[in-house]
Length: 423
Image (cartoon, rainbow, N blue to C red; front, side, top):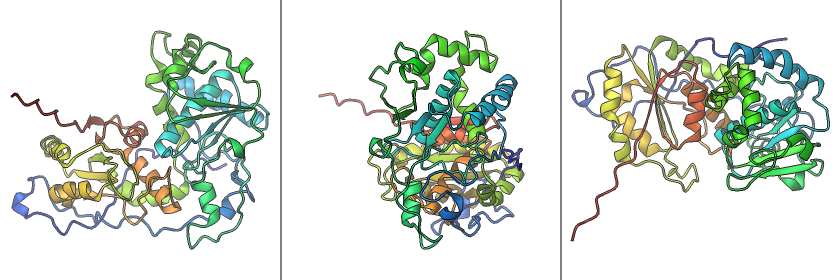
């Protein structure tokens, strides 16, 4: 059995060609230097996966579903032992039982929302000692080396054709874009549509989960239910004991980090694209900046999170951090070409980004290239020594939780509201 370990302390980077609008040298901060390494066009040539080779015919289930390619390696020593010696073997023995708890992507939930939702449902499965499954179209087995066997919920697909190129083929769309709702799941006994405003017995309201939902149970939600789940004292105490915590401590404060660092370890395929970037991280201290604007036409999202003034207000803070580092670099992840240019104009020579791949909101409309880019950016945020993040972005938050370096983190701050005029 081949075990893929998480990065083992490696780090690397990559990016785009320097901006043609870069300011004159004498207008740049003094710590902006010319690195010896190339910082643009680092992504290896994109080679799409042939879905027919990865998955069983007309199915969401990978051909190697029972092959475990990593170990659980995050959390307390006690919890790591529990997962590797008890829950994961239990999952293998009971993987075909008729009572799994299944995470199902809802609506246009993006990759970060799917990661949190999967972690919520996995914890629900651990608490109630039930088999765990997921249908999360952005969390593909060719990208993530899951430490738990056979976690993909089987859904029958209409298509089973489509060569690796041109993309996307109908089969690609079914695997990485399509949402599977109740109409597609006649075999599921119970559907739980969790919302933060409604009481769900056994989750955020009284009731014994296994008694209420004894058969196969699908959970769909646009919101995390970690806090209400652990507000139940019995659930809280059980999870605290598994973590080796006092019942007075808060396991919800560490669960997402513990879950994501083990569950979403990169496969060899993903590591191959990360490798040129990881070399940069190994040689330089790196400040990661994630700008989630929501205003890019590529993103097709009406939400609005940042303005140019909000970004430029942080330049003094960025300067102060970089000034105290030797040969620093900046890794930039952004959905906005306009805001990315603000960073490139000021720090261009030391900035690198993921290039050569599609920029997509992978919960709405994606391609293999776009999904690969999202996974790469998450893991590269997870390699940074310092992080400047958009406060309301789940993507930046998941990247932070993948980070084992305990980085210094701060956030873009909204501009103060204008004072009301006095007449």
